[in-house]
Image 1: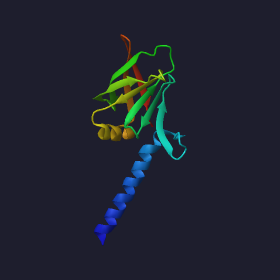
Image 2: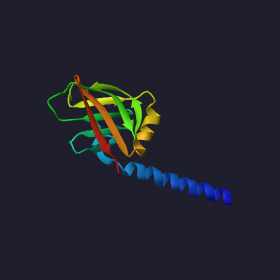
Image 3: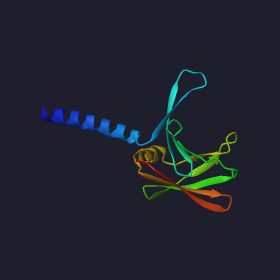
Image 4: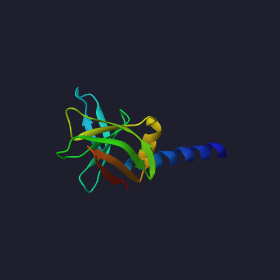
Length: 136
């Protein structure tokens, strides 16, 4: 009986911890083009008005920066100080957006949901840049 009780408590605690992880990110809802599904995206905005969107459906990040320099690439991010090699690809119809993908998608997504600080190393042509997102 005690073993069952401890399992129930462990499950309840994991649910509460999971909800706390999602609460760190701001939430944005979108309806699919056919209007049948509502999709939920998580995002953070930093002081430079840059936005980092966590797309859990395609398992990627989307870096958004409104600027005139649309040629940008991202080769690395740091999640709580731990470097993660990434690949990036600009959206052709939305040049202010850059998709960031990872090799081990599930593991990186889990780390992103639990992260406190994400550093995005952006390259504008030959000029390096750094964008920092604090997640509370």
